[in-house]
Image (cartoon, rainbow, N blue to C red):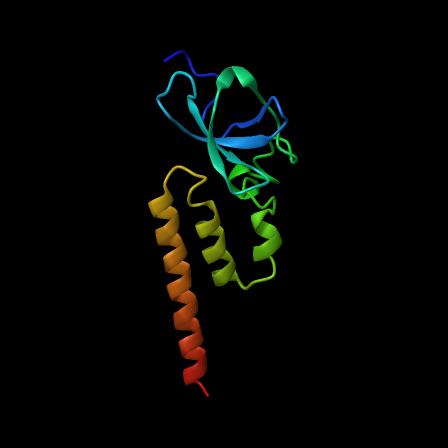
Length: 130
């Protein structure tokens, strides 16, 4: 396989202008990348010589718009949803949202479960007071 031009997480566009995120490598020399389209839900294999790197609509801003919160195929940023929730539920959604976009999906899912269990217990305790 030839040297790879892109890494997992890179935003790329093909010759038709379809933007996607590199989600894995296939091992195939002709179609070395698996791409998840940003404005859709499909994933496909892609040829590197027909693609170029692009910046996200938010730029490369690790503080205000981290890629693991802005890379959802819907185009919605995680905080647009979670800011309307309480702390525990918001964190539950945040960790589920980013589970496949960061390095350790299991750890993120365990964190989500921890916040969800905490919220369930909080509500049980609140109900018992009445």
